[in-house]
Length: 397
Image 1 (tube, rainbow, N blue to C red):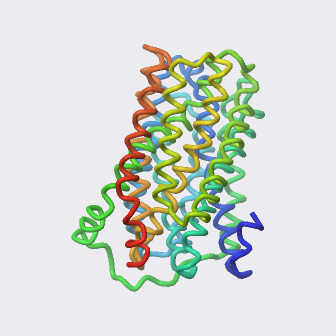
Image 2 (cartoon, one colour):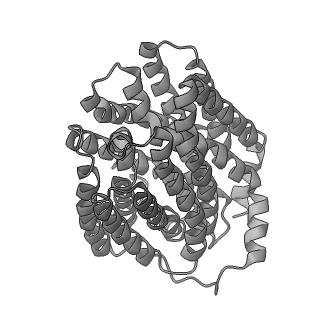
């Protein structure tokens, strides 16, 4: 992390580091669900498709809320939005741990989706307005490491503490930890300058959406796969039968650790070529091909191919939801553009909650990999066709 921030001044290093750490910790109260989905299904006596609805509700609510918080974050204090989000996430997770009804769980996890949307977009406004133009592209390749680290940290922790079958600790423990994170964020006191514009205008939102329509489509396709993998990867590892149940969480976390290599690869290629769009398209295509190969791979080899797909997907998706919003956003609109792009990635990612669960129960994992591979190849084509326009957008900031 220190080497990544070598180009920034000391106050900027502190700011970026605090934002990076805080957002990574958001995942304590988010991807903890993935590790205990099979346990929840057994305890509640429901199917995987039904319990997968928790992921669907979360990502749909989170996606829509991302758009709203992105617009709000362009006009009100990002510091306050992040603080409120952390508080609500902590409370929701603690309350969730004591529920026995899937209906109430769905309501709570939907509320969690609203609270989680108060992180990424407002934080990007702080970065866009506190950093110099020449630093934007560089910091945009650093931020994706935060949510991958957050996923690894959470899966490893929850896999260890909930591996014995007590799924409730997977929620009350992150809730308590997030109260400490809130104290850290409040002490850091990082905020953006006061907004100059009076409020969001519908005409501006529509015009911006038309201009970035290709990025919205690519985010939707990539999000369906990326968030689907976040929801169901531990279940897939469990279904292979190659890993003991209590080790599924740590193994899933190790696969995410390996996938961090994709972020380093994306960062290296962007710094070498100065091309975000072309790099994202190439890595999306590679991930898509790897997922298609999984349709015929045996289970032992499949885990290696899945890891390779995650490496390429992580790098590409990080550029899509991090670098692209900062490059495409006009001055003062970083939160809004980030919110719109992430809305699409998470709303369509939510569809993987129930659809993947239902497809696996009926036909196994092979059709899932076929659909995911096709989505990533299409996203690669969409971005590749617009690669030449990156320079024009950057110069027009």
